[in-house]
Length: 531
Image 1 (cartoon, rainbow, N blue to C red):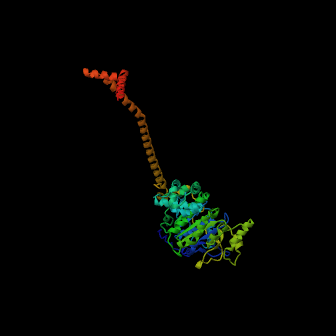
Image 2 (image 1 turned 30 degrees about the vertical axis):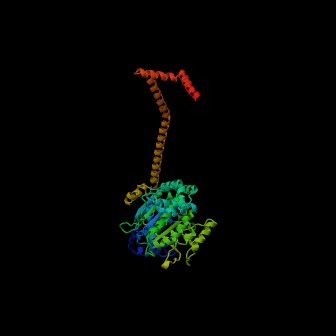
Image 3 (image 1 turned 120 degrees about the horizontal axis):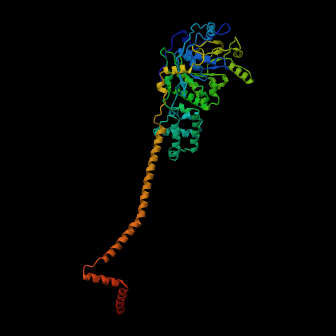
């Protein structure tokens, strides 16, 4: 079970919620995002350059100060500045002070937030990894958009990995297991059903797409411990976990993989909290339109499911995008806390999107919402936050408060310093490649190859011995006959030892000759004639 969470800091602003901003005569009084309803999710929308990133920054600061850990996907690299305090000598100091006076933000001060940098590629932060086994066959099949038959083959692969003790840690483990599955398909099919080479090939091609987008960095060990995303600093402020997403967004399939896994893991691991007094964790997904463009349907379905259910785990999900229409309607309906920056209507499509955006707010009789969305300037917005019993508040025009941390990115040297001070480098920076399915199957294949080579060598030796035996057999037989003849010749060449023996030998020679044969025939003929 994951840790209980961070202790909420004291202070009036924290007790009322996350302070967003306020205004003068034409604007609302101080606006807060109530911590009790912060897990009901939210939306920050607006055209490019209208101040969405700064709004995200001040919301993250507010949650952190309230003891709520935050996860940000930093697409442009601007949010890394949260690791440094704002500069009182900077050019923005005077406008900030004027804005604070207008909205009555007397408690403002420059301060850095506690930041941890993460990066799937391990270049701008600590590596984020998970294992193929933790991803599981169901999520992986949905992500790869596999057919029913292909998903069945993938489930067989995971089942056999469990039965045969083959840990699936990275992509090469799964790929080698699929190769082994294809080689032994006939035997395995007797128990689990038909396994076609076409299905295995389709899965391998989908995995290759993930691999080309950088999944080799994502799948492996050491895997992320979710508790490291829920940490607080010594002062009780929630950790701001910043995920470097500038390169990741160029690999939408990999980004979808990460998002799908992380939300699912949190949903499975976190305990039910019901309606907590504050969130346990808050997600911000910057440039969410890049996430949903051409996203697999499995991802959209999963995000919608998570948006509906994960709030009971105390997790809030906030999407930051250019237009509310970028977010699928089923997901948009789950976003109760909204900050709408200016939208531009240059085309008929833009005008329609503007009208639809205005219609989603609870109207304010003091002004026209559609006109207000067109008119608000940089750093201004129309806002609607959930109030008592989760009822949407009346839309208000709001001046967004200035951030306490630096606006804009920090230097690579400063980033390296923050990473070195996080205490997580020793745990995650060096990859591990322990013995798993790839190595085990390779060892089995090598052992089988060695055994076959030994058997082939023995068979070859036996065949050579048999051939040699056949070749030498006639020579041994001929040698025996010559030896016998030699003995006879040798026997006849020896000198007789007695006169009788000599006479006997002479008689035998004579009888063996022509004359002897005639004598024998004559004697035999006379005998038979007489009879």
